[in-house]
Length: 212
Image (tube, rainbow, N blue to C red; front, side, top):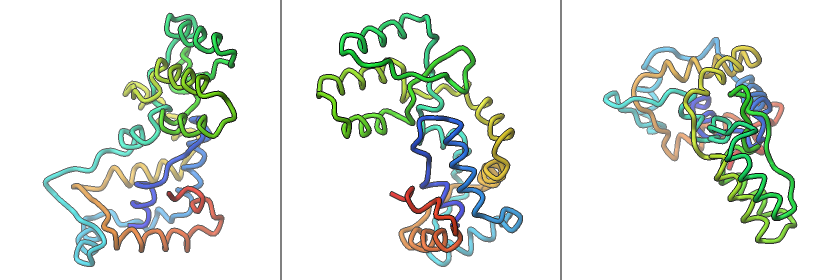
């Protein structure tokens, strides 16, 4: 339950896909995946203890589609550097004398994307910046033009490959999550237990600043 709740709730804040995968690898590394339960008995037991709610009629969304909803900027459509969309972004940024905030799209060769996990995270970051309100609005408009919240499912395969190449513990976490049968939700009581147990297991403190 602790592992499930941790990956349900925690996600990276860096705008870099590679850094984000590294963060998830560190989180996954606090768990002993060799000891993770692989049958439905553990869910039934936790349901009886009022720590989770299960529904065998429903299904749990696979991890990468679920993760893409938390950090849509990683999986965004982006645009090609010579496209009309890119020129519109450049124009908006030029009018307000700010740099064009783009990065190479790690999941789509030849494309660029906005360097943020999503529009909400980007808006929050520029709210704290010492720039005029009109400039903040322009940067949000540019992010929207680059589809920072629009997930392109064709990126899922490359994301999975990057995890395979660089994050073995994160890969084990994804495989375990995807093996869970039925729909699962953590109750308030389960959340308290899971958080406390995660802090107990996490000697490095990697999860502490990520909890909301």
